[in-house]
Length: 554
Image: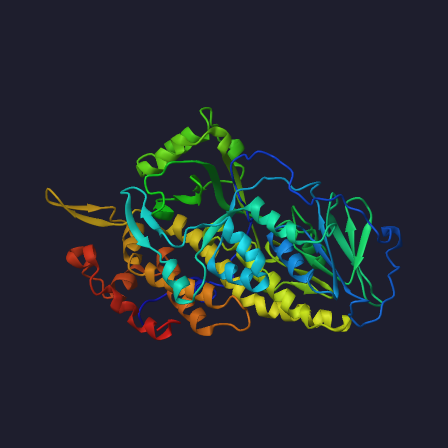
């Protein structure tokens, strides 16, 4: 056996893609000038009063232009608007988006759209895709990767450009969230998005067709199908699963991480050359990314107790506080922190929910999408992307429906097509957070200057060095899995197996799940501490030679 795992370690490695905990999707950004976004409209109800919840409109089963499917969408985020835009083009559907906020405002930072999401958007609506491209900033055509936060050296680079070009896809990049929102709103018929009243629960017709969205105002809106696109604190999900939205019994738990984030105008020395840099080190990491037009965004992820924002005093402000936290780290981190104004920094704790693999996604004529069912940590930038994929699959399933009797089956088909892939991406996002903060350290290194020096030769440092030649393989497998499966018409078992094999190994050794003797002896690394092999890792790739048989590319 190549190595021995403890029982819990083996289980963790096998089900890596399926047991990640859901996490609060977030976009911590700088303050942005507020201005109204066009097409916001106050809610005007035409449905029954909730006091008469037992009364439903009597409809024929057939879905026709004269008797359209009444679609309600709770929430006007990325997933909700993408779904509304696609379904609104079908003359046999009448779509209403119910949004809690009074009006849309230009608030919110950039959102990453990876190549898989861009391919979905192009398939859904090429005009929307072209308008997005007009305001898009590519990061995938630049240098991206992980850097040693202390030594300021590249640790591992990931190729976003090659996998996209190989599949003839657009490069990954970012767009300002308000711009994306406005592009969708401009495509929707006037009055389809109704603001000022949020969905707090729903009721279903036990004797026929229909679901009623109960609003904060006490009114109700009736439809044939309701989609919960109302985020991690979803009222639709709470009703479906009979659990509170927040608090005890809601399944919410603190992830163990807090994040500081800033967005600013910044003259980076590597502008136009580097898109995304992750600086790793003991117990924390820092991200700097180019968001276009001379603007940059950064994130500082720290392992802190819940409520640390209130518990820790920062008399000199967040920038100086973080400069102290990252003392001794790369000068690039300190340069951008010093350039950031206090009103350009926000801090948020990240919260998790239990996995949704074995919990309901759909029930009758109600279904969940996006963060309401698979919220994920932000490390891969796939939260919005996966919501867009949800919308694409839902639209495909409903397109062929000719009867209201088919809706429950169609929604179950949607769950079946999306369950494995979204769980794997969710797991990968969580995996990335845990590995970088809990498993990575400054890589161990032998320095041959003024004699022989051994730097950071502890378990974490050695493991981090061992993973260095493996991560490019893992990145290739990861992007193959993400980019090849965007249609969600089947599970790519080949890519999934490679992902689990390499990812399980990384998870096991980086979190200390492999016995140390097996780690060094079983892998044939007894001579690791003795010389050249460690410095260059020549021949290490032989450990993963057999993985090539499973990689989903020539």
